[in-house]
Image 1: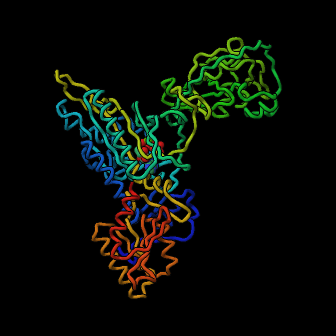
Image 2: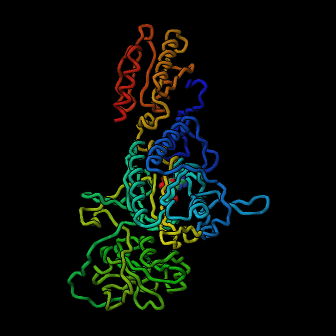
Image 3: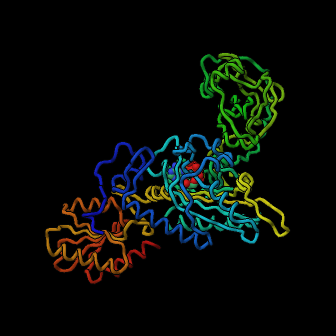
Amino acid sequence: MKQSFFLVPTMREVPADADVVSHQLMLRAGMIRQVAAGIYTYLPLARRVIRKIESIVREELDQTGAQEITMPTLHPAELWQESGRWEKYGDELMRLTDRHNRQFALGPTHEEVITSLIRDSINSYKKLPLNVYQIQSKFRDERRPRFGLLRGREFIMKDAYSFHTGGESLDEMYKVMYDAYSRIFRRAGLNVRPVIADSGAIGGKDTHEFMALADVGEDTIAYSDQSDYAANIEMAAVKVNYTRPDEPLLERELVDTGDAKTIRAVAERLSVQEEKIIKSLLVSIDDEWALILLRGDHELNDIKLKHALGASDIRLATEEEVLEVIGTEVGTIGPIDVKGMKVIADHGIKSIVNGVCGANESNKHFVHVNEGRDFTVDTYADLRFIQEGDPSPDGKGTIRFAQGIEVGQVFKLGTVYSEKLGATFLDENGKSQPMLMGCYGIGVSRMVAAVIEQHHDEDGIVWPTSVAPFDVHVLALNVKKEEQMKLADSVYHSLQQAGLDVLLDDRPERAGVKFKDADLIGLPLRVAVGKRADEGYVEVKVRKTGEVIEVHADELVPTIQAKLQQLAE
Ligand code: ATP
Ligand code: MG
């Protein structure tokens, strides 16, 4: 490809509206342009990277026996009503109406479409298991589209769906896909950690997310410093055996805490540690009020609360609701003499003796409060976020945190969708049974950004060879010098003939501009054709290491091939 006619509008300035490196570099390197919030055009460089990622995905999935199909982007509302998700998916579902006033959604995921297809085309155990996939644009009206391709409203996803006669077959496929995902991300140059995850809006049970480690990642991973244990912080179980310190119980006292409303302020005012304070939260759980108790130094994990109670809808009461239901302000709620609601406590509460809690009265707290004597707990559960320094739930080592970008997820869905949509099969005994399902997603466009987050330096992108838009960047440093242009052309052709993807910078720009753009675009190898062109010499630079060597044009192809080989290892 000759750069003079190649649509790669590079920019010198860092765009003001881009605050993560991958977004900045993709704009600067002329890879993407925004059309509307979270909606982008992929220019040729980005398109080439996506194509390389897609072929890695296809190669690995085809090898597992998965079959590629293409489902529509437009989904009739009826299908989503059948699964119950027309309502449940909420504002993230992009909805539209056709000329006959029929409602449609732009597909954010395809469980409904695929389950209805399989329901209508497969009815015997003999045709199962089956695994199908597609790569296409998905639409989600994200509340906060941001960080360029990391969180778009229109983005490219690979989604796969498997159908099974039983749990063993699903478990097997899950493992096959898990392994294929590990290979896909490794081949794309991503440092990824699989973590135990929450199944979220899709439903189902067993699930892992694949997290590309990066500081800009929106997910926090809790991992053990001494074992393989890693979980999304949403799911990481806290396994601490709390024991009540052996102290004499003191008499409860009502004290004035003035305008101290936060845990920290109360701790300071009363000169007690935060872990001695009982934090009380009024929460609506499936439309019933409950009081949730946590230690002052712990944070409520609402996903754990949901799971612990098997609830579907959980939200914190507003200030007005707290006033109405408890009769005091948010900062002074407590469990003593609270009536008409369940009291649910995190296990950490068991470690508090002579604690502090809100007195359900403005500006007042109780001190020397003890569970059992002053209030009772209906249910204890693991409700808090794990913290750095906690013991790892597998009993090995201590928990540390890292940030990750979710680039993929594998789910065991079970029969959630097959039951709702009636995807059944006849087993060996002629009995009708719902199919078991798995589903598996990869954020293809998000992967491009994740790769850049992990592979860049202050000058620009440093592409891993497997997904680089081209293998080699040939720079004709001075296009007015005939011998330079001639050698650049011949080098360009011989590299192409050797089967390499080559970008030739033949623009009438200064050498300095070309070097800067080459670093910014970040192809693995750069071949500069300059002053020594008349002797047949060119300069090869390895983008990743900065290594520079002079090579005679006759030796160039094998040199480049060897360097690429080295980089790929
Ligand atoms: P997130 O938690 O980041 O919103 P998700 O768990 O809702 O993602 P899935 O339904 O698991 O996403 O979709 C499969 C994959 O699609 C994700 O692992 C992610 O890589 C990608 N993906 C999801 N939402 C987006 C988005 N808004 N922009 C780009 N990629 C996305
Ligand atoms: Mg996910």
